[in-house]
Image (cartoon, rainbow over all chains, first blue to last red; front, side, top):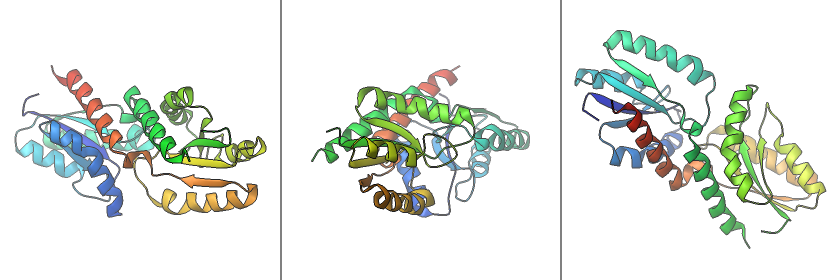
Length: 125
Length: 125
């Protein structure tokens, strides 16, 4: 990956700081191991998607891949985010690819099974 | 785990069948490898939490652990689900433990990193 490509982990956002902290912890292994990866929020929290794209574009990034931190695609990912992307591409002259939400990847189902197995250990008594 | 204990993977629910299908696929590895595990929805889809607890209780299950298929805890998990649980415990004479949402477990952050690395392969050209 060149510096001209940035990964954005997109979360919904909330006015509840605890909610955002959970997403920041979820993003941490990615941000720590992958250059040029950042978290952004659709709404209600900063940094917004708008902020991240504007900053990246100013620093010369031309291509962005958005990976939604959503388990499934609902209205936000089918309608709202594509509309935001169209506007941001026109505004900043960049290309933005919207990947599937993380929950569409089979790795997530396996991680969930591992979490459940850990919970079963706790409930064993 | 005895037959008297059931694991419930709780998703929000949606009137969009594609949304529910994604959650059913996410639940599949768990349901296939763990006895007495089922998916349930808070609202807008079946089987509801109510249905699963009522059925389990009728079959002799006394203890349930709910593992929320949510990345973070918002209003639903802090208020709505605890209220539903209180009502269901009284109604069916069972005990229901609400576990942390899956996104609170560090395994999820690692799975997200793996998904991002897979996406990077796709974007490499």
